[in-house]
Length: 75
Ligand SMILES: [Zn+2]
Image (cartoon, rainbow, N blue to C red; front, side, top):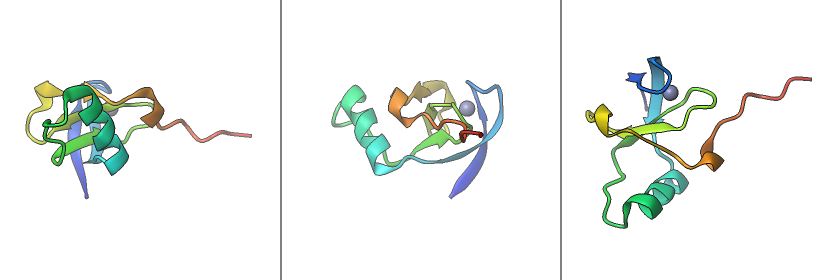
């Protein structure tokens, strides 16, 4: 499922998707085991790590660096 939302980091409309399980686990590591991660959405733009809970964009955070999507290598 994809939603179009304005990304506070990109400063433009981007496609957001729900976090994958490994991303949720990483957020829990930072926010605590009781943090609700089942309705978090992340920006799918290349290089962007922004996520936020549905409808609460001001609570946005950044995923750990390892989840950064690099631009495809060009040869
Ligand atoms: Zn973004």
